[in-house]
Image: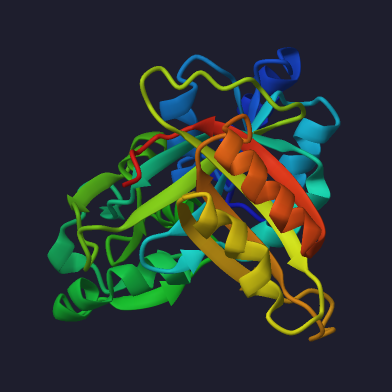
Length: 299
């Protein structure tokens, strides 16, 4: 954690100690305290100790080794699509998705105490956050400056205590680093939302509680003509709704694609069981990553 500003590092030390004292309830996330992953974790598990991790690998490893009971990981954003590397890390981790959560990402312009928006000349943040507030920053004449993450940028702005240098980050980051909120909801698109998933060592029997269920699967099609058409045919003939399907290449082979898919329903449903059987027949491998309650209803 030496790469984080001192203010963030000091908070991390305290959070890590609390998580170490209660690993079964601890929830790991990637980023500095005040990151949107931290916000998602607190919304999902308000009473649990949280464990900041420098990388996604570190957060997943904490669950695999029992240092944390859960991990909350972003998987896709409404503006920028899938989160890099997650589709590779999920099947390799051996963990199961047990829940999902959506966070409306609302950026704030944060400055040191007493600063005014008119004083700000530079804004630090993660490049994605800066891109999401590009028009507003340009209109205000504020130069965007890339930083490792949003919460770390807030900690750095607090450390510098320069009224001309602000950060683009969350309201939670303002609370943690004692910064003034100079402007709220500065993102250019009002639908800016990130979907998170909760990962655990073992799958759980989902309780829909009146909500529908989702199932996430990953698979690799065989390297034959019309492989994907054949593999997905069972979903069409059995009336199964696919809400997400993404392909990606591994190891630069360019021979056969791997796919990530979200399905409405559970493998316990006969129609989905039949569709998965057909998918397995036409694929080299299929892995069910988890079945969990919908956080938002799918049509």
